[in-house]
Length: 118
Image (cartoon, rainbow, N blue to C red; front, side, top):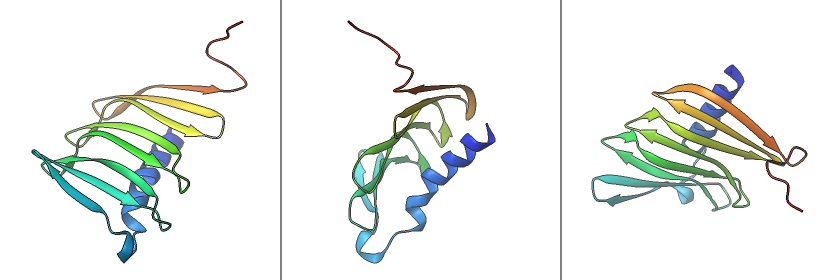
């Protein structure tokens, strides 16, 4: 569980640390929320999500430098909540949060399919 928490912290803090001047975050006001877009050094989107009253709020998505989605998360007033998904090679991890705490982790891989059809 420690490994998952560390991985989550690294994923969602990475974009804010490694920005260059030409790849500055883009912030747009949408109603009461602020939509934030962070970029990789190559200009591809690294993360998108929203802030409400200065706290992470709503859906956040992370992408690799090729534009492939690597994570999808939910926040409610700065707290982790709901289902989070992490894609890595042929593995999908689902991490369920309730009030900022991990309640369940499920992992799927191509070698262990969820559904088999004829």
